[in-house]
Length: 397
Image 1 (cartoon, rainbow, N blue to C red):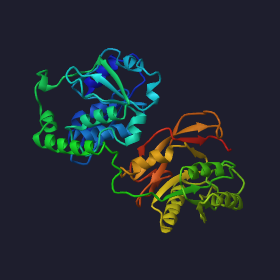
Image 2 (cartoon, helix red, strand yellow):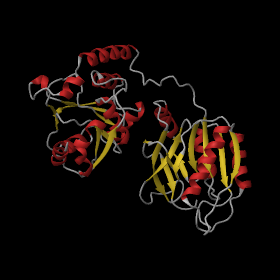
Image 3 (cartoon, one colour):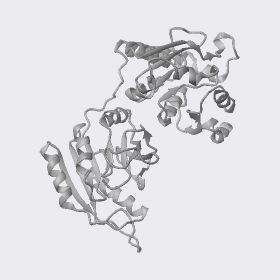
Image 4 (cartoon, rainbow, N blue to C red):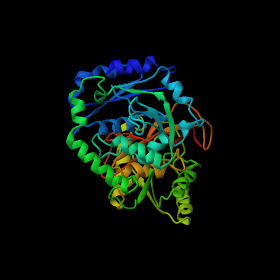
């Protein structure tokens, strides 16, 4: 594992990249050294069946970059691979929805070494369609990209695929598993079915969402209506305001004005929304400051209340966070993939809309089913992070 990371690092011009390594649980101990490798984050695929598609999809869900590059131990990058990719046209292609088709030294009509932008990934919610095990996953990815006309032809750049079928190395047990007859047959059958239907995103059996915004009011903020309005514009119909009996901050402040929250609720109802307001008792420490246990308690009390009202697709909203205008549509795509917890990187702002201020933070956006809060705003299941879809006010606004 380390030799792969070392080669990619050595051949890069910049250091604007990270490695996200996924190991199967049964192989993790033998490769744990990757955890201590620079620019590397390690995750364990802990639930069988283990296969490369599940591993790559897990890695993609944990990556934070604008471009996702599939890396395998039999792919040889060229010198200056990062600079060659960044120099491609159109300019600023990393911001758009694209797949980059590079040469692998063998197959010209199939991208066996996929490179996709985050926008392309977020459209689907996965790198490879999840029901493939190995065979035909790259065939669909390639043909779907050409079908959608989002391909950047970079076949002048060689990322050599050292594949045993080309007699470049010996066949090993992983090769045998990935190219087995059963995987070939199931992959081909799935590919033909999905191609006939135009490679659908495959939303699954879920119908329409009945979103409920759980809005925790911690201070008297003039931005509260704007925050809720942004969600209303994206289709959220239900707003449930949790007003703690005391402030959730240690610094002295004015008591929360429930009447002001009621005015916000009235303005939302004028737009067709349904609103609910509930004051929740907050136990305080002997010093008068809120403990993390108390904050966790109030968030879970709010979740219990909202679910008792019949809502189970809950958006976690704080009164200092503004969602981007397309955040809900993106979130819905991932929830349809059965993620029970989703978070986002929050970009700090001095006010709304404001200017950039400070380092990014991570905030929980969604909880499904009966998932609880474990600590402050951390869920009891690891969330998927969809990145940069949130603005966080770093001062009262």
